[in-house]
Structures are given as C-alpha cells and as structure tokens.
Figure 1 (cartoon, one colour):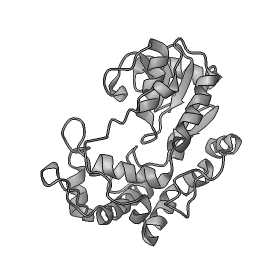
Figure 2 (cartoon, helix red, strand yellow):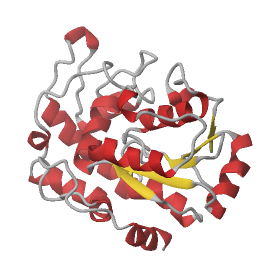
Figure 3 (tube, helix red, strand yellow):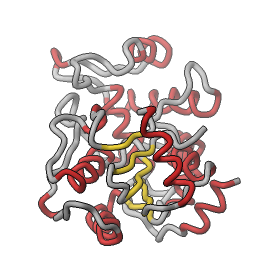
Length: 272
C-alpha cells in the first residue's frame, strides 16, 4: 500500500501525513515555503512541483525510503470529530467547489433523492434547513463508513485514525500529532524540530482556507447540529478518533482537546 496521503519537502526536512479538513492547505503551504521562500500560487493540493507527494509516481520511492527509515521528522494534524464532520458537510455537500461545480458531480442530487438532504443554491442564498440536512447527511456518512454503501467513504469524512493508520501500519513513525485547535503551538514545535532551507515565521503565515467563500455560512453553534441520534452516529463513526486524539465525545460544544495525545498508544493501536 505504501504511504498514500503523505507529503514531503524536496529538501526532505520533514514528512507530513495529510488528514483532510485538518488545516492541510495551510500546512502544505508552510512546507512549500520552508523550501522555496514563497507560497505556492494556487491551491497547494494542485501543486505538481516543489513538494513531494505520494500521488506523484516519481515521489513515491523517495517518500517510502525516508518514511521507513524514519530519516526525517514526521507529523500529522487532527481536529475535533464533531467540527470536522460539520466542516465536511458545509464544504463538500452544501458548498460549491472552486471550479463552480458541486463536489463529485452527481453525489449531491443522489443525497437529495435517497436521504432528503437539501443544500440550497447560490441563487437562493443557500436557503435551507441546515440542521435537518446535516443530520440526514450524517446518516449517509455513517452508511458509507459502516456499510460502504451507497459508496466508499470519502476522504473528507472517513476517520482520521484510518488516514493516519496507513502511515503507521506501513512502517512510518510520527514524531508529533498537532491539534488544529492549538495549531500555532503545535506547528511551532514542528518547525523548531526541523532544519529547513528557509526559516518560517509562523505569525506571518496567512491562513489558507481553500473552501472558504464557496458556500453557506454556518448559522448555528456546533452543538445545535447534534441531537442524541446525531451524537450516536458520530460515536459510531469516530469513537477511535475521540479516544486516540484526546477529544470530548460527550460534549459537541467543547471543541478543544481534553488531554494530550499519547504517541506510544497511537502507534501501538494503529500498527495492529
């Protein structure tokens, strides 16, 4: 299987296991800048130069050799599962993508027919019942994760532990897992631990949010979207993420981690 979703700077100063909806655009741009002294002009996910990516065939042997030998500092980033799945809904289901189209073509119409999900449109100002539609989307997301029907789970809502697990199970070792909610602290620790060709002043790095402005704004606090059934579905999908990465499974209103991550426990669990 190798190391899907893994990026590495061309200088091999650092390896990063991408987890979608966990500041990956900003992290990718920081890595790009740390080698080249400039940010990539566009969405870093579209970059085909300046950064090694597992999706680029020529990068694979370099990433694999480095990761297996643990030659470089390796890290990833995680996010509260409640806010992550909510962000996935507003970006990938309710939002319009940068190309002006819906995500994955006919997926949203299928969700509308099969699950009753409504998402509005730019023409009506995205006027729809956000809470009702999100809860119906949760049923769909659970079905994809639990039963792989009506499709395989999408990378934007499949469990973070599943993403990170491929890196660990195939011989990678993580030196740090950054909490999005404490991004400045965690990313600074990564930068302090590596030697890059270009120093990065984190306070001067803009926030790269490639999904922002392409869809509806969230109209309610996070906890309003999760009733008892919704919380049950989230637990069913992400119980392992809450446990491994230190988030509060019982309180959607508490987005902050409630304990530090035990890297030894994460590696032991994900290697099995």
